[in-house]
Image (cartoon, rainbow, N blue to C red; front, side, top):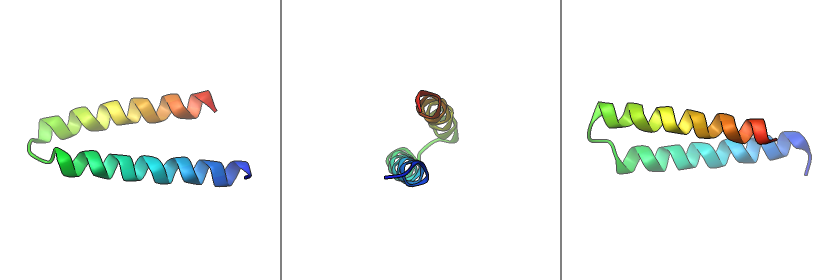
Length: 50
């Protein structure tokens, strides 16, 4: 598995994870913003670890 494939898998997994969160908590815009913020931070941490 090369690096590009690995990155693609991580991005696909994160997209799926984010969509799942969005479906579960689509009530308030404020909550969506909070999820987006936490998700972005989590995603950046994963990239940094690579």
